[in-house]
Image (tube, rainbow, N blue to C red; front, side, top):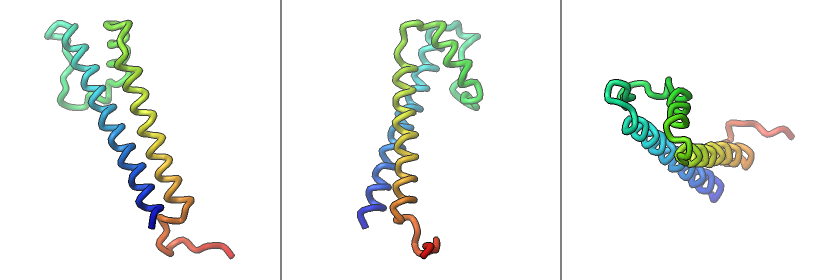
Length: 105
């Protein structure tokens, strides 16, 4: 009974880390918009993620000493590690199989 709870808790921690990473990405876009002229501003509506690498390069150009990208990367990495850890834990502990995966004897 403890394995699904632990796997779920690690998954929720990963979800919280990814939410924080997305908030930091919005801070990066807001910081760029604060420094750029109004006609070159990046819209927060729509598919901003399609221009992900362009936005990060623009932030590095405008804020060479900025730490938001480092913080964004750390939170993203922790989130992905938690997601992979929870999936691996649930898969390899046998907690995810409810008798549907036959065991080799």
